[in-house]
Amino acid sequence: MRYFNARVFLADEQGAETVEWVMIAAVLAGIIAIASWDILKDAVNASIIKITGCIENVTNGTC
Image (cartoon, rainbow, N blue to C red; front, side, top):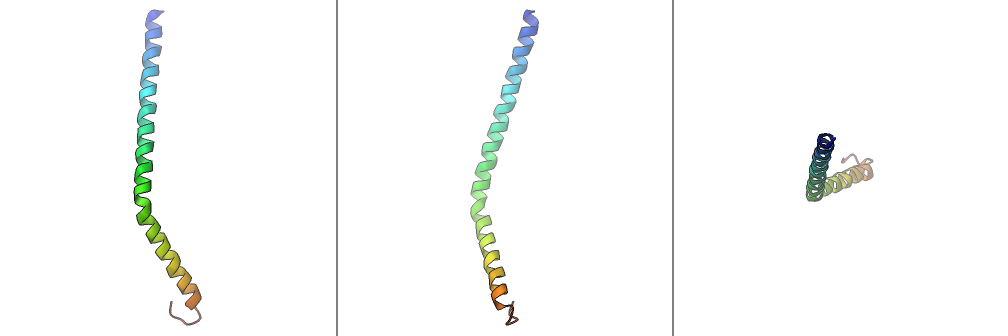
């Protein structure tokens, strides 16, 4: 019975370590997303401005 309990404890420890690595990966992914958001934000804003300008100038044919 002690052997079985030791194996269950080992499995729990391995599971906890896996959860820990998943949490670390999630934090790193969040940091990367936040860091790249400035670049993405500028590109999105430029696209919105371009599309808005095209919609406003569609009657002039300058789009």
